[in-house]
Structures are given as structure tokens and as C-alpha cells.
Length: 272
Image 1 (tube, rainbow, N blue to C red):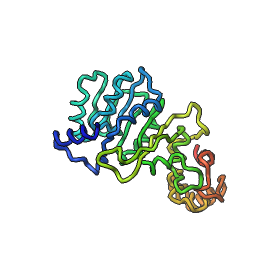
Image 2: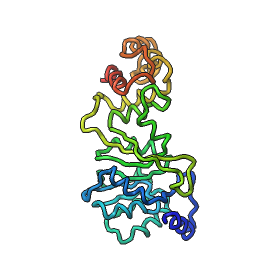
Image 3: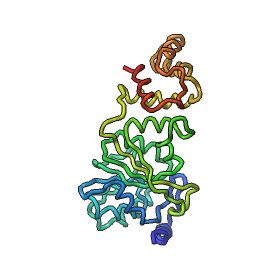
Image 4: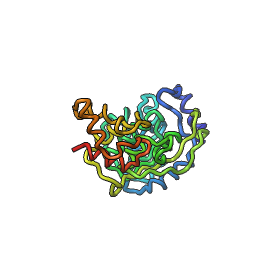
């Protein structure tokens, strides 16, 4: 049982799970096969395991693909990880922050990252050329990726991700499958970059920045919500920004009412 092994490793190496680092260790190995199926794992794949913990997932993956790159931020846990993967010649351990570390190339991600890392990790992955990422994430957070227009969960994350990738939610993962137990349940999520994007944008950075801003003003009409953003971003006078905002598409709509494609049209009308 992974629960017994996890407790034994924590005792042996005198490690106390760090709540700040989101250390909730997966103790249900039956999920590992599902992660491989959803990732369509092949023997030629190089897989990133971000937040690898004690390496239970990495050890399972080792015989199923070409190489595993495990990343673990906690020094004590990383030391145990190195011990656990001894004998697996195709598993590399990188100690540090996955968002800052220098990593070998990889084409797929299969990981159970700590919750605090979730949004930054997804945005980081979208900037990389990968075939897919299969992650176990907090359910409330994962629901934002597939939220319908106008719903409470619909926000900048939904819009920005939708432009770049298809997101699907699969099995619910009970909090009882972790030790120590988190306060909420999780879900298996797959992110698969589009072979052809549903809509094109001229300037990705501007698009992302604009969408994030507008969802801080989600209930205001865009004609009013956009003015301060345009004034700051385009270095316009207050009057110029207000005038421009009222000439743009959807100026009489609210951010929560626009589809991802609408946001793309709006950004393209402003950016060059």
C-alpha cells in the first residue's frame, strides 16, 4: 500500500509534510494507469513529472516510456526521490522550481502537482510545444477551464486556455486518495494543444493582459471597463481612451458575456 510506504518514508527520513508547499502525497496507485491511458503514453515519449514527491508515479511510468524527468522542489523529498528511483536508468531527478529550472526537452506531462503551482504551471505549459498534459488538479480550479460563458467559474483562465488548447475533465479523485488529506477533491484533467486554433490572435501577450484586466471588471460594460486599460497600455489620454473604447466591438457587452472568440476579436481590433 502506498499509504503505508508514504508513512514509512516520512518517518524514516523525518519529514513533516509542508502545507505551504502543498505536500499531499498521492497514495492510490490504481490511478497511475488511467493517467497513462489519458496521455496516450507511448514507449517513445519523454514525460515531465512536476512535483514528483517520493517518485511512486515516476517508478510506474519508467517502464512505459523513453524517459521521465522528475522535478521536486523540497530538498528532503528530492533526496528520498533519488533513492526511490535508483535502478531506473531512464528517470532524471531535477531539484528545484519547475518554472525556473533548466530542463531537458519533453513532449508530454503526467503529473500530480501541488495545488499552489496549478495556474502558473498550466500557463507555463501552454508556452511549450507538448503533445498533451494530464494532471490531477483541485476540482474547483479545474472547473474553471471548462466553465460555460456567463457562469461564475468563467474567467480569464477559461478564455486564455481555450485559445491555445482543448481541455477535458475525466475522473473525480477523492481527497481520501492523498496523505495527508487535502480539504477538497481533485479531478484528472487533460490539456491538448489545438492542431489548429479556434481563433487567431495578433498579439498573445496583449490578448492575455487584456483578458485578465477585463475579468477584474467583469460586470462593467466594456466601453467603460476598457478605458483605463487602453489609457495605460497604449499611452493615450483619458479622452482618447474613452473614445476608442466606445468604437470597439462589444463595447456595450460585459466581460462575462463574451465568448473566448469574442475576446480574440476585441484584442485584434486594438492590437497591431
